[in-house]
Length: 348
Image (cartoon, rainbow, N blue to C red; front, side, top):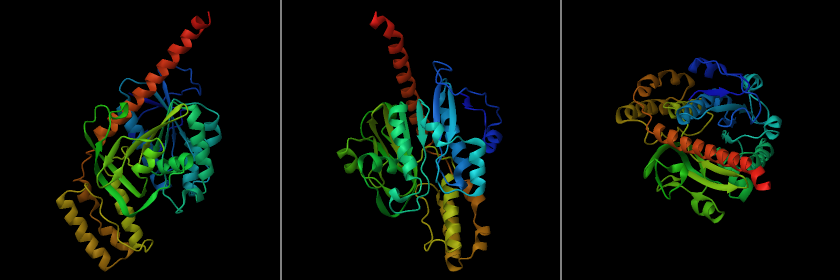
Protein backbone atom coordinates (compact mmCIF):
# COMPACT_ATOMS: atom_id res chain seq x y z
CA UNK A 1 0.00 0.00 0.00
CA UNK A 2 1.47 3.41 -0.94
CA UNK A 3 2.45 5.59 2.00
CA UNK A 4 2.01 9.34 1.96
CA UNK A 5 4.77 11.49 3.43
CA UNK A 6 2.87 13.99 5.52
CA UNK A 7 3.65 17.52 4.47
CA UNK A 8 4.97 16.36 1.08
CA UNK A 9 8.69 16.88 1.84
CA UNK A 10 10.31 13.66 0.64
CA UNK A 11 13.95 12.93 1.51
CA UNK A 12 16.15 12.58 -1.56
CA UNK A 13 17.27 8.97 -1.03
CA UNK A 14 13.72 7.85 -0.31
CA UNK A 15 12.36 9.64 -3.36
CA UNK A 16 15.09 8.23 -5.60
CA UNK A 17 14.74 4.66 -4.30
CA UNK A 18 10.95 4.60 -4.49
CA UNK A 19 10.51 6.84 -7.56
CA UNK A 20 7.24 8.29 -6.29
CA UNK A 21 5.67 11.65 -5.64
CA UNK A 22 3.86 11.66 -2.32
CA UNK A 23 0.58 13.42 -1.87
CA UNK A 24 0.25 16.22 0.64
CA UNK A 25 -1.60 15.13 3.78
CA UNK A 26 -2.99 17.97 5.90
CA UNK A 27 -1.91 17.98 9.53
CA UNK A 28 -5.24 16.75 10.84
CA UNK A 29 -6.39 13.48 12.35
CA UNK A 30 -9.73 13.79 10.49
CA UNK A 31 -8.48 13.44 6.90
CA UNK A 32 -9.95 9.95 6.49
CA UNK A 33 -11.61 7.61 8.97
CA UNK A 34 -9.32 4.75 7.85
CA UNK A 35 -6.04 6.66 7.55
CA UNK A 36 -3.40 5.75 10.13
CA UNK A 37 -1.09 8.62 11.00
CA UNK A 38 2.38 7.40 12.02
CA UNK A 39 5.21 9.55 13.39
CA UNK A 40 8.81 8.39 12.94
CA UNK A 41 11.21 9.98 15.44
CA UNK A 42 14.52 9.18 13.80
CA UNK A 43 17.44 9.52 16.22
CA UNK A 44 19.94 7.44 14.25
CA UNK A 45 23.44 8.87 13.61
CA UNK A 46 23.95 10.85 10.41
CA UNK A 47 25.62 7.91 8.66
CA UNK A 48 22.42 5.84 9.10
CA UNK A 49 19.81 8.60 9.01
CA UNK A 50 18.62 8.14 5.42
CA UNK A 51 19.01 4.36 5.45
CA UNK A 52 16.71 4.24 8.48
CA UNK A 53 14.07 6.32 6.67
CA UNK A 54 14.15 3.84 3.80
CA UNK A 55 14.10 0.77 6.07
CA UNK A 56 10.98 1.86 7.96
CA UNK A 57 9.27 3.10 4.80
CA UNK A 58 9.84 -0.29 3.13
CA UNK A 59 8.69 -2.20 6.21
CA UNK A 60 5.51 -0.16 6.66
CA UNK A 61 4.74 -0.31 2.94
CA UNK A 62 5.01 -4.09 2.91
CA UNK A 63 3.01 -4.44 6.12
CA UNK A 64 0.20 -2.05 5.21
CA UNK A 65 -1.54 -4.21 2.54
CA UNK A 66 -4.79 -2.20 2.14
CA UNK A 67 -4.28 0.16 5.09
CA UNK A 68 -3.76 3.83 4.10
CA UNK A 69 -0.88 5.36 6.04
CA UNK A 70 0.67 8.79 6.32
CA UNK A 71 4.18 9.07 7.74
CA UNK A 72 5.65 12.20 9.27
CA UNK A 73 9.35 12.53 10.15
CA UNK A 74 10.49 14.12 13.41
CA UNK A 75 13.83 14.81 15.07
CA UNK A 76 14.87 15.52 18.64
CA UNK A 77 17.12 18.36 19.75
CA UNK A 78 20.59 17.67 21.17
CA UNK A 79 21.20 14.41 19.27
CA UNK A 80 24.81 14.90 18.01
CA UNK A 81 24.78 15.91 14.32
CA UNK A 82 27.16 17.10 11.64
CA UNK A 83 26.34 20.15 9.52
CA UNK A 84 25.12 17.81 6.77
CA UNK A 85 22.87 15.99 9.21
CA UNK A 86 21.41 19.22 10.53
CA UNK A 87 20.71 20.39 6.98
CA UNK A 88 18.89 17.13 6.17
CA UNK A 89 16.72 17.50 9.26
CA UNK A 90 15.88 21.12 8.45
CA UNK A 91 14.84 20.15 4.92
CA UNK A 92 12.72 17.09 5.63
CA UNK A 93 11.91 16.79 9.35
CA UNK A 94 9.70 18.54 11.85
CA UNK A 95 10.81 19.40 15.36
CA UNK A 96 9.87 18.05 18.76
CA UNK A 97 7.66 21.05 19.58
CA UNK A 98 5.33 20.19 16.70
CA UNK A 99 5.28 16.52 17.73
CA UNK A 100 4.35 17.35 21.30
CA UNK A 101 1.41 19.47 20.15
CA UNK A 102 0.01 16.72 17.87
CA UNK A 103 -1.70 13.37 18.14
CA UNK A 104 -0.82 10.27 16.09
CA UNK A 105 -2.22 6.77 15.90
CA UNK A 106 1.28 5.34 16.29
CA UNK A 107 4.83 6.54 16.82
CA UNK A 108 8.11 4.76 16.10
CA UNK A 109 11.12 6.02 18.07
CA UNK A 110 14.53 4.78 16.97
CA UNK A 111 17.66 4.41 19.02
CA UNK A 112 21.01 5.99 18.35
CA UNK A 113 24.64 5.21 19.09
CA UNK A 114 25.24 5.67 22.84
CA UNK A 115 27.98 8.05 23.92
CA UNK A 116 27.70 7.75 27.73
CA UNK A 117 27.61 4.70 30.05
CA UNK A 118 24.51 6.11 31.76
CA UNK A 119 21.69 7.00 29.37
CA UNK A 120 20.54 9.75 31.72
CA UNK A 121 23.78 11.58 30.88
CA UNK A 122 23.07 11.67 27.14
CA UNK A 123 22.44 15.25 25.91
CA UNK A 124 19.06 14.33 24.42
CA UNK A 125 17.78 12.50 27.53
CA UNK A 126 15.28 15.13 28.70
CA UNK A 127 13.81 15.56 25.23
CA UNK A 128 13.46 11.80 24.81
CA UNK A 129 11.72 11.39 28.18
CA UNK A 130 9.33 14.20 27.26
CA UNK A 131 8.42 12.34 24.06
CA UNK A 132 7.81 9.12 26.04
CA UNK A 133 5.45 10.99 28.34
CA UNK A 134 3.66 12.57 25.38
CA UNK A 135 3.26 9.19 23.67
CA UNK A 136 1.47 7.67 26.67
CA UNK A 137 -1.56 9.94 26.18
CA UNK A 138 -1.34 10.97 22.52
CA UNK A 139 -0.87 7.68 20.65
CA UNK A 140 -2.60 4.32 20.51
CA UNK A 141 0.73 2.48 20.42
CA UNK A 142 4.41 3.36 20.62
CA UNK A 143 7.30 1.35 19.15
CA UNK A 144 10.71 1.78 20.81
CA UNK A 145 13.72 0.41 18.94
CA UNK A 146 16.96 -0.79 20.57
CA UNK A 147 18.46 2.06 22.64
CA UNK A 148 15.05 3.79 22.73
CA UNK A 149 13.65 0.61 24.35
CA UNK A 150 16.39 0.74 26.98
CA UNK A 151 15.72 4.43 27.57
CA UNK A 152 11.98 3.84 27.83
CA UNK A 153 12.16 1.23 30.60
CA UNK A 154 14.77 3.28 32.45
CA UNK A 155 12.66 6.44 32.29
CA UNK A 156 9.34 4.93 33.42
CA UNK A 157 10.35 1.95 35.60
CA UNK A 158 13.98 2.65 36.54
CA UNK A 159 15.14 -0.59 34.89
CA UNK A 160 18.86 -0.26 34.08
CA UNK A 161 20.50 -1.83 31.06
CA UNK A 162 23.29 -4.34 31.64
CA UNK A 163 26.54 -4.14 29.62
CA UNK A 164 27.49 -7.21 27.58
CA UNK A 165 30.95 -8.73 27.34
CA UNK A 166 30.90 -8.29 23.57
CA UNK A 167 28.55 -6.75 21.04
CA UNK A 168 25.32 -8.73 20.50
CA UNK A 169 25.77 -8.68 16.77
CA UNK A 170 24.16 -10.83 14.10
CA UNK A 171 20.91 -12.68 13.41
CA UNK A 172 19.57 -14.66 16.38
CA UNK A 173 16.74 -17.14 16.79
CA UNK A 174 13.98 -16.25 19.24
CA UNK A 175 11.11 -18.34 20.60
CA UNK A 176 7.63 -16.97 21.10
CA UNK A 177 6.71 -17.37 24.77
CA UNK A 178 3.02 -16.53 24.89
CA UNK A 179 0.20 -15.77 22.42
CA UNK A 180 -0.25 -12.09 21.65
CA UNK A 181 -1.81 -10.15 18.76
CA UNK A 182 1.64 -8.83 17.76
CA UNK A 183 3.08 -12.32 17.25
CA UNK A 184 0.13 -13.85 15.40
CA UNK A 185 1.16 -15.61 12.21
CA UNK A 186 4.91 -15.88 12.92
CA UNK A 187 4.98 -19.41 14.33
CA UNK A 188 6.96 -20.64 17.30
CA UNK A 189 10.26 -19.00 16.40
CA UNK A 190 11.67 -15.99 14.58
CA UNK A 191 15.08 -14.74 13.50
CA UNK A 192 15.86 -11.08 14.14
CA UNK A 193 19.02 -8.95 13.63
CA UNK A 194 20.63 -7.42 16.71
CA UNK A 195 23.37 -4.85 17.12
CA UNK A 196 23.87 -3.70 20.71
CA UNK A 197 26.35 -3.57 23.58
CA UNK A 198 23.74 -3.72 26.37
CA UNK A 199 20.58 -5.57 27.33
CA UNK A 200 17.59 -5.40 29.63
CA UNK A 201 16.83 -8.67 31.37
CA UNK A 202 13.61 -10.65 31.48
CA UNK A 203 13.26 -10.86 35.26
CA UNK A 204 13.62 -7.09 35.66
CA UNK A 205 11.01 -6.51 32.97
CA UNK A 206 8.42 -8.97 34.25
CA UNK A 207 8.77 -7.68 37.82
CA UNK A 208 7.70 -4.25 36.53
CA UNK A 209 4.69 -5.50 34.58
CA UNK A 210 6.19 -5.96 31.12
CA UNK A 211 5.11 -8.98 29.08
CA UNK A 212 8.03 -10.69 27.33
CA UNK A 213 6.84 -12.06 23.99
CA UNK A 214 10.04 -13.46 22.45
CA UNK A 215 13.24 -14.67 24.07
CA UNK A 216 16.43 -16.52 23.08
CA UNK A 217 18.39 -18.96 25.21
CA UNK A 218 21.69 -17.29 24.27
CA UNK A 219 20.65 -13.78 23.21
CA UNK A 220 18.14 -12.71 25.85
CA UNK A 221 14.88 -10.84 25.32
CA UNK A 222 13.82 -9.26 22.04
CA UNK A 223 10.15 -8.22 21.91
CA UNK A 224 8.27 -7.08 25.03
CA UNK A 225 5.21 -4.91 25.69
CA UNK A 226 3.44 -2.90 28.39
CA UNK A 227 0.35 -0.71 28.42
CA UNK A 228 1.25 2.79 29.59
CA UNK A 229 -1.86 4.92 30.04
CA UNK A 230 -3.52 5.13 26.58
CA UNK A 231 -0.64 3.64 24.60
CA UNK A 232 0.62 0.08 24.16
CA UNK A 233 4.40 0.39 24.33
CA UNK A 234 6.12 -2.14 22.05
CA UNK A 235 9.86 -2.64 22.63
CA UNK A 236 12.39 -4.27 20.32
CA UNK A 237 15.96 -4.88 21.45
CA UNK A 238 16.58 -6.01 17.87
CA UNK A 239 15.98 -4.54 14.43
CA UNK A 240 13.28 -6.19 12.30
CA UNK A 241 13.49 -3.15 10.00
CA UNK A 242 17.09 -3.81 8.92
CA UNK A 243 17.60 -4.43 5.23
CA UNK A 244 19.72 -7.25 3.85
CA UNK A 245 23.10 -5.50 4.01
CA UNK A 246 22.75 -3.34 7.12
CA UNK A 247 24.77 -5.68 9.36
CA UNK A 248 27.49 -5.89 6.70
CA UNK A 249 27.71 -2.08 6.59
CA UNK A 250 27.94 -1.90 10.39
CA UNK A 251 30.66 -4.56 10.43
CA UNK A 252 32.66 -2.65 7.83
CA UNK A 253 32.19 0.57 9.83
CA UNK A 254 33.52 -1.08 12.98
CA UNK A 255 36.51 -2.48 11.06
CA UNK A 256 37.21 1.00 9.75
CA UNK A 257 37.25 2.31 13.31
CA UNK A 258 39.75 -0.38 14.29
CA UNK A 259 42.02 0.48 11.36
CA UNK A 260 41.87 4.16 12.32
CA UNK A 261 42.76 3.27 15.94
CA UNK A 262 39.35 4.53 17.12
CA UNK A 263 38.76 1.20 18.86
CA UNK A 264 41.30 -1.16 20.42
CA UNK A 265 39.99 -4.54 19.29
CA UNK A 266 39.04 -5.96 15.92
CA UNK A 267 35.22 -6.36 15.84
CA UNK A 268 33.58 -9.74 16.15
CA UNK A 269 31.92 -11.09 13.01
CA UNK A 270 28.09 -10.97 13.09
CA UNK A 271 26.66 -14.35 14.07
CA UNK A 272 24.20 -16.30 11.92
CA UNK A 273 24.59 -13.89 9.01
CA UNK A 274 27.41 -14.98 6.67
CA UNK A 275 27.74 -18.36 4.96
CA UNK A 276 30.90 -20.45 5.15
CA UNK A 277 32.50 -19.00 2.02
CA UNK A 278 31.88 -15.38 3.10
CA UNK A 279 33.15 -16.13 6.61
CA UNK A 280 36.37 -17.50 5.10
CA UNK A 281 36.94 -14.35 3.07
CA UNK A 282 36.32 -12.15 6.09
CA UNK A 283 38.55 -14.20 8.37
CA UNK A 284 41.36 -13.93 5.82
CA UNK A 285 40.88 -10.14 5.71
CA UNK A 286 40.87 -10.02 9.51
CA UNK A 287 44.24 -11.80 9.71
CA UNK A 288 45.83 -9.34 7.30
CA UNK A 289 44.20 -6.30 8.93
CA UNK A 290 45.33 -7.26 12.44
CA UNK A 291 48.86 -7.83 11.15
CA UNK A 292 48.96 -4.42 9.44
CA UNK A 293 46.21 -2.15 10.85
CA UNK A 294 46.31 0.87 8.53
CA UNK A 295 43.40 2.88 7.14
CA UNK A 296 44.30 2.06 3.53
CA UNK A 297 43.74 -1.64 4.24
CA UNK A 298 39.98 -1.07 4.03
CA UNK A 299 40.24 -0.83 0.23
CA UNK A 300 40.89 -4.59 0.24
CA UNK A 301 37.75 -5.42 2.23
CA UNK A 302 35.82 -8.05 0.16
CA UNK A 303 32.50 -6.22 0.42
CA UNK A 304 31.10 -7.02 -3.04
CA UNK A 305 31.90 -10.73 -2.83
CA UNK A 306 30.44 -11.04 0.64
CA UNK A 307 27.34 -8.94 -0.09
CA UNK A 308 26.38 -11.26 -2.94
CA UNK A 309 26.03 -14.16 -0.48
CA UNK A 310 23.96 -12.45 2.24
CA UNK A 311 20.29 -13.40 2.53
CA UNK A 312 17.46 -11.66 4.37
CA UNK A 313 15.97 -14.38 6.55
CA UNK A 314 14.08 -12.04 8.90
CA UNK A 315 12.09 -9.88 6.48
CA UNK A 316 8.87 -11.95 6.49
CA UNK A 317 8.75 -11.98 10.28
CA UNK A 318 9.37 -8.24 10.50
CA UNK A 319 6.59 -7.55 8.00
CA UNK A 320 4.17 -9.79 9.90
CA UNK A 321 4.86 -8.17 13.28
CA UNK A 322 4.39 -4.69 11.82
CA UNK A 323 1.26 -5.82 9.96
CA UNK A 324 -0.12 -7.01 13.28
CA UNK A 325 0.80 -3.65 14.81
CA UNK A 326 -1.02 -1.73 12.07
CA UNK A 327 -4.05 -3.97 12.48
CA UNK A 328 -4.00 -3.23 16.20
CA UNK A 329 -3.93 0.52 15.49
CA UNK A 330 -6.77 0.16 12.99
CA UNK A 331 -8.93 -1.87 15.37
CA UNK A 332 -8.47 0.65 18.18
CA UNK A 333 -9.27 3.52 15.83
CA UNK A 334 -12.41 1.71 14.68
CA UNK A 335 -13.47 1.13 18.29
CA UNK A 336 -13.01 4.82 19.00
CA UNK A 337 -15.08 5.80 15.98
CA UNK A 338 -17.88 3.42 17.02
CA UNK A 339 -17.95 4.80 20.56
CA UNK A 340 -17.99 8.36 19.22
CA UNK A 341 -20.94 7.57 16.95
CA UNK A 342 -22.83 5.96 19.85
CA UNK A 343 -22.26 8.90 22.21
CA UNK A 344 -25.33 10.94 21.07
CA UNK A 345 -27.55 7.84 21.39
CA UNK A 346 -26.21 7.13 24.89
CA UNK A 347 -26.79 10.74 25.94
CA UNK A 348 -30.34 10.62 24.54
